[in-house]
Image: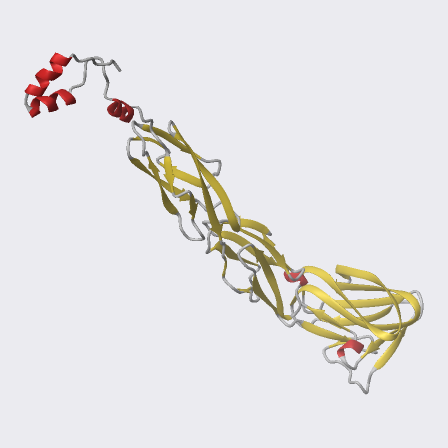
Length: 368
């Protein structure tokens, strides 16, 4: 600042002047001097201030706001970015000499169950800030329908798996029976429901009511889907000691035991009406003193012509009657009235076949 020098004559003159003249003189700024207070205000830079410092969306909120403030001078130029694909900002950049608002939105559709953390980076010509973002994902399993009833004629049923909660529902399926399957066996659900096809193999189901289930294991809870399939009772043919297959079993008192040698022992059944045969279940109560292999064969004859033949071998070693159960696939064969069903059993060593008594100590066939 330039220095000012005043002479005594000048001061005397001022003393003789008015008070106003004195004030005006004191307020005057000599040439070449600057107003420093105004200069400092103009030179203050823009400053970034972001509030709040963190955003917690919990398990339900989708949108929150951030305030981008400029307590400094000039224009604040800012830009927001994130590495989290589930975060979105509107706007993502701006300019302000006072304050801007950013709408922050979270998308849970691709997120798995649990808590997730991300961040927003705000960069500007007035500094940088980082905002922590947390969100909770809670998927919820929904299955429709809750029960699958195949009745006596349905082979497929479509059910749906959906997510009534948030985020991504991860699921897998576990059928409880070999005759039951579901496709696909696993998947993910967010918005739309996933269709699953459940099917049954009726060749492997038993006469009467068959019960099973499909276990649904998911990140949004588990569920059990009961499954029911009904089959006609079928026709049971009991082995008799006379070599015939009959509709009635022997009583406990009249139980018979037939010795089987190496030569086949034969039973015959004649159909009195047309009958559709999908499969045959065999149930033989057999005992042996030492390990012995038995050979079982079943054939369907129409006159002298053999329509179908099925068979299997089993090893038996027990002095007590042991049930031996097998399923023979008849491939939807139709038997006509007058056709004959012939059963043959042979063994390499002595075995005993039991007929009559309780079901475990009885021998019979079931035509289904």
